Image 1: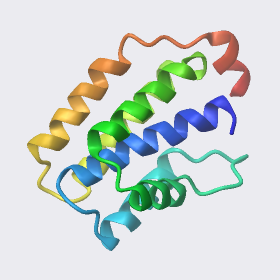
Image 2: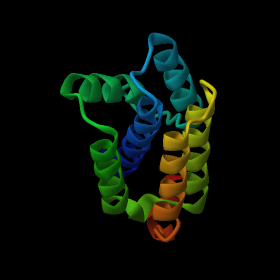
Image 3: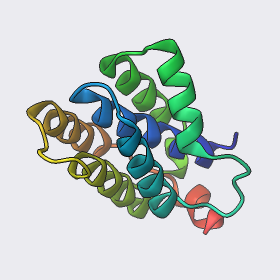
Image 4: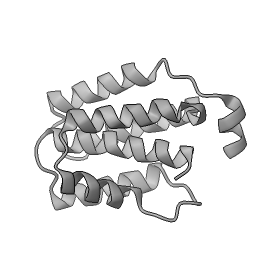
Length: 134
């Protein structure tokens, strides 16, 4: 995967952590998750489905929310040179939509969202990298 694809995969992991924070992710939630990810993180050169891969890996390995969040933030920091201000906004929008997809938004979900906003805020991408992508 490319650095940009890794960033999208990482935000998918954060979104999964939010969906999973209030218990097991139901089939309806999976479809809503897929729809939000597809609509917000569409990238025409992807030859794979981000949300399906995330569910397959994280469901199979039964990975907890904290581990998923840690892995995702590590990946975001590793590929941060492609993290544009607009992509940051999109990522925040995605996780907020995931949390709101099945009300109510729980305290655990709110905590993950606020933590993510705080953790991603100081990360600055490099325009040399992210401007040539768009």
